[in-house]
Image (cartoon, rainbow over all chains, first blue to last red; front, side):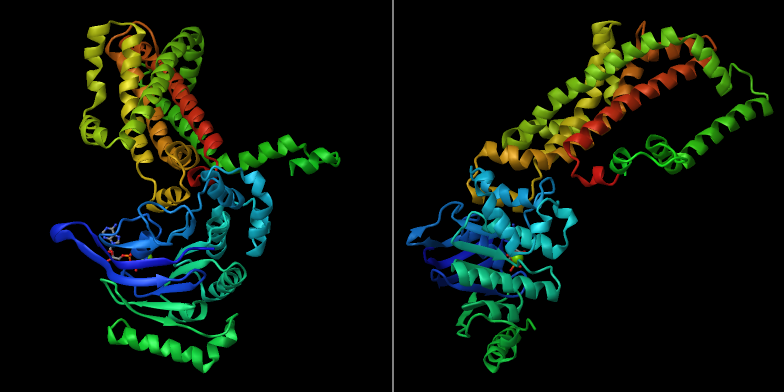
Length: 255
Length: 275
Ligand SMILES: Nc1ncnc2c1ncn2[C@@H]1O[C@H](COP(=O)(O)OP(=O)(O)O)[C@@H](O)[C@H]1O
Ligand SMILES: [Mg+2]
């Protein structure tokens, strides 16, 4: 079971003096174990910055992050992370890229071949296991990267706009995959997006982040039933949530 | 295609697979071949047409005939210049790659030696050739050193660049797995750096024969550079061209070797895939 993640007056400033960029915060937030939390905000509001701090890959300028009550002070290895640009390497096949996560952790991929195959099958990539990333479409690459982030079975997933560069149809398919996975294994998911609909559809909680310097304007619990397929999007509850969030961004002049 | 033809015998009246493949490659490369043949024919004819004396510009047929007669000497010199070039080139890689690696990973070296190297890059290395020859004499050693000098900078500077430019994402990905320095190096940093390293290797390969030749011009008693200089002094441009031909073969050989290594080591890279 994943531990609760707490942000306490967390803030990040890049650089010093006159060149300093006040990128994020201060913000307080509690991400309960097993929840699906979206970080929703316009580009440049500090979503990636926040995610990197949660991963322990970027030191906060102020405040702290607690995981299970303990302060994060270095890279967390108990998480699965998908960066805004995928981390598939061109010299390995799809299968090899997924295995890279295990090899870097000092594990033998051959011991986990079954799990790798099963993962690839779950995102319909089994026929492409021996292909290299450049032979895949954008959507397939993202799905491969998804497998890479999952193969060591982390119970916390940090996903930075995993669907950002994909077309609407592909997005819908991968959203469904992601939801299925979350419902089955109940990892804690922190999901960065700038799509209001996507956030409402997938999340148990949507954190609305203001334009830079990003602050968490509000955390909205979405209590629609699961699984949330396309039909959910036409329910009044769904559209209410979407409208409410749109209002907030309109007030900030983002949309 | 080759598998199919080895499984069942080729039907009668059809050409064997080897010949077919040869024809196919000829079909692809004929414009290039035709261009070259045309160029040499033009050369051959214009020497007659404009009455150019042979001591200014010999005919290609003449070059082949006279060069052929002098092949034993040319081959001897080919080995000598080849030795200088290859030894110098691989020494440059053996020294340049580790130094590049060290500079890429050491902040101290990056702030001291790196700027020094960058400024040295601007110095035409070949200008040191007369000095080395006056210090070390006419033998092969000064030539090897000059080849090393010419090849070292492209190798080292490209290696620094190669090992110093892993993307933020990949760096962070590796850190998030908890992998140590060595594991990260072998699994990610090294393969990611190889394409840029090869840019340096190829650039150096092109320059290696230039270095050896000029070094021989300046002071030597053997080698293709020496040969070209001597026969030119004797008003024998036909032999000079024959020497140039052998130098070209040497250059192609080295470049071909590096390209082969590139195909074997980074077949996944776009620069290789395109071919
Ligand atoms: N390494 C960095 N150095 C300086 N400024 C940065 C750096 N990374 C991000 N920023 C700035 O911080 C702000 C937030 O960036 P980011 O977290 O990438 O936003 P988002 O992911 O929400 O688009 C932006 O204004 C960006 O210019
Ligand atoms: Mg971002």
